[in-house]
Structure formats: C-alpha cells, structure tokens
Image 1 (cartoon, one colour):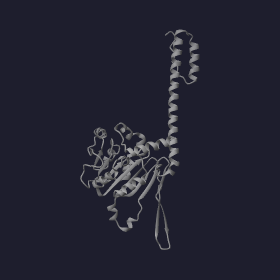
Image 2 (cartoon, one colour):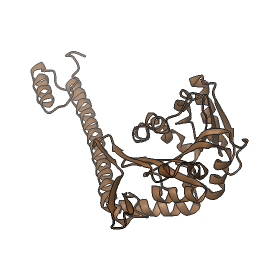
Image 3 (cartoon, helix red, strand yellow):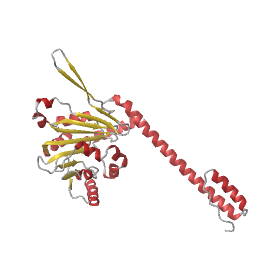
Image 4 (cartoon, one colour):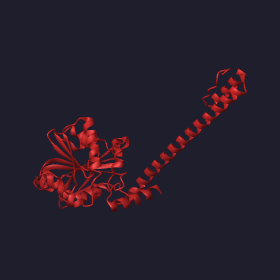
Length: 327
C-alpha cells in the first residue's frame, strides 16, 4: 500500500510539475538529506577548481551553494521563488560569505551572458520544470564549451525519475554523459557538451563514461562492467551493464523498492508505539505520585507504611515523591 501511495503521488506531481514550496525549505537541510546527499560528496564528484564560476540552478535555500562557495571563485544561486532566495540570503549573512550572488529568475530565462559558467548544478530540479528542453538549452547557452553540467535526483522526491530518462533528456539537448555516481536514495550525473566530444580524438571517443555505484552503509562500490568479445571479423563489441532503480521506468526495481518502503513504514510504526508507551507510562507515574502524596498527607501518618509502598512502586520503575512526615 505504501508503495502504491508513493507511486500515485509521484504520478500526480510529475504531471503537475510541482516545485518545493518555501514552507518545506527546512527539509532541504534535514540531517537525513545531508547524509545521503552530502555536499562534500557532490563537491568531490564535481571536482571544482579554485578559479571556477558556478551556477546553482534551483538553489532553494542554499544547501549546496554555501559549501561549494568555499571551493570556487564565485557561485551564482538562482531560484524562481523569492521566498527561497530570501532564505538563502539570510543564511549568507549568517555565514558571512561574499562570493555567493543570489538571483530570482526562471530556468528558461537566465540573466547571464553566454559562456559564463564553468559548471552548472541542477539538484532535484529538472523533473519539476514545465519546459525542460528550454531550460537545458538555456543551461547550454550560459555554460562554457568545456564546462560540465551536474544533474542529481533523489528517490524520496515525488517527481523522481530514473537516471536513464534524465540522461536521455540531456542528450537530446546537446549533452553527453561523462560519469555517474549513485546510492540507494539518489544519483548524480556529470555531463559535457557534445561539441567537446566531437573535437576529441577517435581513440577517446570509444571510451565509456566512468560509472560508479556506492553505498556508505553497505560498503558497496561497483564499476561499470564491460564485456568485450571479438568476432571472426575482429570487430569490437562493448556492452554496458546498468540497472535503474526507478519503479516507474523499470518494474524489476520494485523488488528493491517495496522492501525499503516496508522497512520505513515498520520503523515509523515502532517509533510511534514507543513514544505512545513512554507517554502513557509517564502519565501513570504522575497519577500514582499525586494519589500517594495526597493519601499520605491527609490520612496516613505511619512512615513505615509510606516507605513500604514507595519501595514497591520504585521496584516497578515508578518515581515516587512522598511528602515528609508532618507536612
């Protein structure tokens, strides 16, 4: 049932192209998200240079713009929602960063000259856009010929799509896949412009993009497998083995998605039951304390009986506060 609800919400939001509202901005900086979508991992994957100028498109409240600013010359953070940009500017004042410039603009009309940026980040943005093709064309316009485009999506987002679909969108807009990194909850793609690929030597063209899969919890890391076979005519055949964990594009991935969703539902049920049990126990202790205290003050004057009852209750885990005799 949980898997069906998730897929239904994802289907509706994908049709509506919803964007994250400012009320949910704190979730963008939640400890859970900063664990599976760690800015340090994203920066390592991007491999920026100190003199770079980077565009963070769909920056939100600056979850990645602020950490990235410490590694490059300048970051231009763009979001279509003024409330998100205001939240980003407040964080910039608190962090005292001067090399991050915030802008309010749509992804299809960027206020920058052509060939301005060395890199463009689009983290959990592309599926939300109404006109993805126009946005990718605009990104290619402002990106330098040798610049890189980094696109990332997260499984828990309602509008999540698999990396193969995103790579196809980017290829149709003039980009080519260079590298991919993923874990069970998100993936990241690094793309370059096709004009750069055409200018490379024939030997470099046949190289497959580096593909990495990593999971910190399980300690898994696999490389993109290639099976090479030589026919009698000495032709080279290269086959790449990839797997997409998107239930909407690959039904086989439900074998993994359903247990994960069931695990989260079970953990939520355990947490709710534990909190309810603790609340009920605290209320019972408070009632017993009040009853014992009033009974001891009004009627019972024998200290031995009070100590006897208090001892029994303490053995059961209750915290008992008995008024001193004579009070």
